[in-house]
Length: 351
Image 1 (cartoon, rainbow, N blue to C red):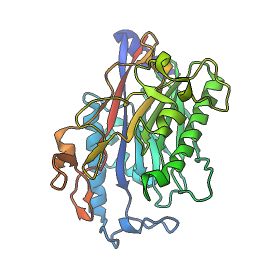
Image 2 (image 1 turned 60 degrees about the horizontal axis):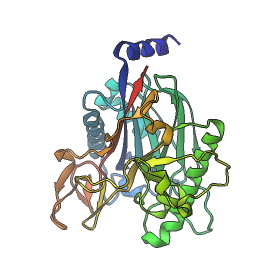
Image 3 (image 1 turned 135 degrees about the vertical axis):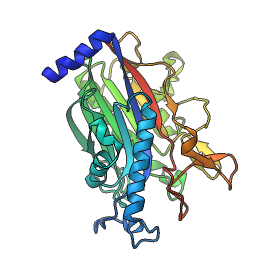
């Protein structure tokens, strides 16, 4: 209690404080230990990528560098991570890199992904008071589907006393073909939508923050229609009735979700590049309550952006232009960062 009163006094003295969130697919953050229950052989010292302890340690330092740089003056309050293998990886990230000075805590999923990768949330205890978390498997509707990452739901309080529900997602991949794999992402979107509706059933104006790698763009059916996340600022009167997909839960008034990365014209024009084409697979989505600039906690308009400093990019010799600077390009070790660029958004907390 004393801890939280002290934090509230910080707000009172300054009137408002910044609250930055970040989402980052770190691409294959594996340790060097063999898990006999998953297909992680590729990332072992004896594997075809020769994933040694030195390369693993370097990867940890690279991820920490990105998180620190994305915070600018202060590291982000919340960091959603995709493609982390296990607790051991996160413990080392937070204890054996400069992030140990930031006093992050974490929670993560322990799902049934074939390769053993999961999603996680890092949070700073002085900005987010953790109350609990749960993970939800995707409810698939067809027998032949991919084992995929669970959806991570974390809830806590921010400095204003508002409850914040955070969902970190990594939807099923496009491996095997975009259209062939699309039904699995539809199911992931339905599962996430149901979770949002459950929060809404408890509180009529919830503060919901969704982030992660959706393996679909903001205009794809899974995001725009099934999850029902629309461009920000949302122009609800212009949304056709045919696109207002009601869930099985009775939500009245309508629970609106705003996609901060829809219809954005930025450079680069996406967070991921495949065969020469950029696409916005990584997104941050918020409930309409967080878009209300008169609320105690609200989005800073225009703050959502791809974090793309020069050190995260390298020359694309195959497709021209630039591409993300990766740990591996094919099977060639580059010693970079990831095949995705991180995304960030800022919120203000007012007294």
